[in-house]
Structures are given as C-alpha cells and as structure tokens.
Image 1 (cartoon, helix red, strand yellow):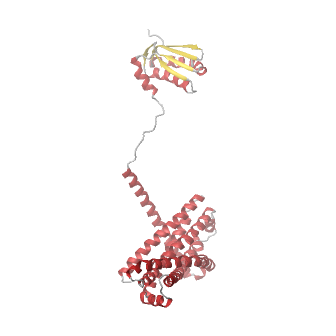
Image 2: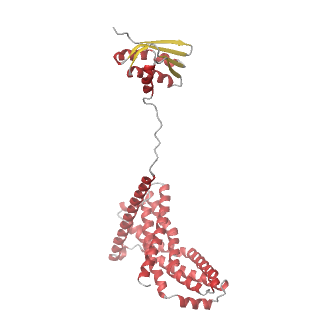
Length: 378
C-alpha cells in the first residue's frame, strides 16, 4: 500500500513552517490539491513561509508545481518564502518549475543596419510614389476644371481670383522688392570685390544682369512665394478640412476644385511672372546702387554695360520658368492642405511639408529648365 502524501503546518510566531512528506506525485493529485487549499489561509496570515522538503520521498512535476504555487502565494504579497532541505535528486526539477511563467527580460536584438536602411529606402519609395500620384491627380483635376471654365466662362469665380491676386501679388510686392534688391546688391558687391583683383570690375555688371534675369530673379521670387503664399494655401485648406467645410461644399453640390483650388492656382500662375519681373528690376537696381557707391561706376556706364551684356533672350529664359514654378507651388500647397487630418499637429506637419516640397521641386524644375535651354542654345 502506497503511503499518502502529507503537509504539516507548524506556525512559529510570524513564520509558518510547511513540511511536505511522502510521495508528491501526479498519482495523488486530488490529495495534493486538498492539502494545498487547507494551508492557504495560514499562508496568507503569515509574514514568512518556509517549506522543508526533507520529508518528501517522491516528487514529479505536478507535486513540484503545487509546492511552487504555495511559495508564489506567499511571495505575491511581499512575504518571504524559501525552500529548505531539498534533496539533490529533486533540486533540478524544482529549479525548472521555479522558472515557469517567470517574467524574463526580453532578449536584446541588435537590428541589422543594412535592413534598416533598406526599410527606410522602401518607405521613402512608397511615400514618393504616393506624392507623385497625388500630384498627378491634382494636375488632372485642375486641367478638367480649366476645360470646364473654357467651355463656360461664366463659371470662373472672378471675385475669388481677383482677391487671391491681391493677396499673393499686390501684398507681396514690398517684401519681394526688398529681398531681391538686397540680393542684387550683395551679388554686385561680391563681384566688384573679387573682380577688382584682376582689373575686371566691368564684368560684374555682366554677372549681375545674366544671373538675375536668367536664374536668381525668378528663383528667389518663387522660393519666397512658396514660403509665403504656399504655406498660407496649405493652412487655409487644412483648416477648412478640419472644420469639414470642404465636405459641406461637396454636400451642397459644389466642386472644391472649382471653388477653392482653381482660383488660387490661377492667381499664382498669373502673379508669379509679374513678381519675378518686379523682383528682377529691383535686383538690377540694387546692383546699380552698389556699382555707383562701391564700384565707382556711374549710372550711365552701368546701364550701357548692362545693355551690352544682356539680351531679351536672358529675360525670356527667366520669365518662361515662372508659370511652371507657380503651377508646381500651387498644386503642392493645395494637395498638402487637403491631406490634413483632424488635429493641429497634422496641420503644422502638412504646412511644413508643403513648403519643403515646393522649394525642392522649384529648384529641381529650375535645373531642368537650365539644362533644356542650354541644349537648345538659349
């Protein structure tokens, strides 16, 4: 006859001594669970629990787990619990059971830097594809809206167009004139300073005229318009998107492209060439003042040299870029505004993205035009 397992509980002050005896195996599972429940209240009342394993004659995984649960029950409330008298033949099993369901620190994995870079490249590629898709969709929508205006001229919202021209054109003239004037003056000053060492001060006028008319005049104005008007477009449309005003327009049967976007983009396409022309004149004037006061070159000589150095081709090369740059700025600004979600953080992020993308695309477009005009001899 097999002996029955026992569990002797001996309180000693605040310490509860538990002494399991006999076979603690799966064959006695009902008895083991009953013994564990019988001492549960004593374990909860004690401040420390000691389990003396010296009387255990047989032990398997189930018996070890019942004893481990008693130990964890005591330790769960901050009380101490320890095993003593564990025979060598049972120590390995007890160690294994103690590790069951223990919180282990997550293994530290060192990411592969190559895979990280490939992942970043993949995300950037997907993002670029989405940007190109949205840009082309907006371009197509604007083209269809323009076709509709050509078919029905009365559908053009002239009041909105004139208002946008006033905002992005007339109100921008002071800052455009100031910045381009300073740019022209700085270029002239640097030209006189460096060319003077070679006795070639007169070539400063050539440099100022060609740079301003072909490149810097329209480029500086386009960058300023992207930062000033492009960001305003994105913020306006984003705020309307957050307040669901664009959805309300669609519910009323009005096309947001016709009502909101076409007047803004059309105003940019009209205003940017005019601003580029004004900015170029201001830059040339700034260069003339520097030539007079820093380069000892009178206005008559400056104008005569400028007349010899530049031609109408230089002006055409610069001014032809302006409508395309305006179209890019308008499409990017409006599309980013329509991508705003319902939070102020999204509005700020899309506004920043709009300005960065617009400036980047304007510079890329300027480079493409430079290559194109050079290839055809202009």
